[in-house]
Image (cartoon, rainbow, N blue to C red; front, side, top):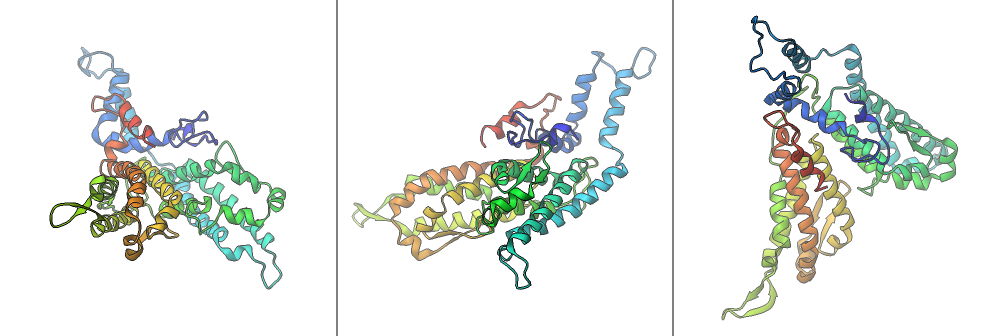
Length: 402
């Protein structure tokens, strides 16, 4: 695994556009399996090591040295030997994710921030919980560096990206994000910051809090099939289900379309000042249903394109929670939507139209990308063309959107 994959700083991005390289190796790591499967990896190597000869054999009938090198490299890439160190890293990552999930749960629990009857202060409990979190977080990061379980390491990479994005907030409570992605706790600074800042940072009531985002990544990292990026094997079978993303895209466009809000005509064909509220509500109800269905099925994906676009959708919804609430659309602690028919139908439809023209169009864009990555993951993660050349368009399609 490339060292650049794990060289981390707050300036890095998911695909390494930051000055520090970020998580630039993630894209390549996810590409390996499909590239091996469709043969483009071998074609790429042939292109690199090619000698310009029309045959793999010399005049004497023996294979050329470049072909021998090529075959050896390809065989090692296709059937690598998993060392004891890698096996240990894989085991440590699996167990570490479970332990870290528990550590986060403690920091997201309101009871952690209250004094106990036995005399233990809330401040002492928070310090202890943060020590456990930092230690368990670092174990996961360290294990992931040597692991070949790509379905899990993809979520660890995303977790590290969320941590880097919250580096300033973490620093306020005495937690430093090191260049290698690990955390370092300043206990004195933590005590000085106070427990309220820690509670806010790990709030379970805010779906966009740092703690909520980390908990989400850990949930799916722990449940993801143990795909070995070195061998391509999985610890359990996987099934492909409709993500709801394509339907959400259609619903979003419908709610953003002026045609939905055409005024009702009377029996003589004259336009009235009334909307077809039942029709608009049906579109909104379908939007809510497919929004939830998309998250229920797509959140378990380890494809970084899916994960990133779901994150963008979740953020947009969180920012617009108050506006949605006015129309009877609520957001629960898990980020799922629910709609109240009476409240929606009694809303000002002109305001509904104005709101969804922006919000709906924006959601449609990301839902379209979720559908794209869910249905074409092999192509989306493959950076090589059939001729062995690097597919620049495959990268820019994602980067330009998010």
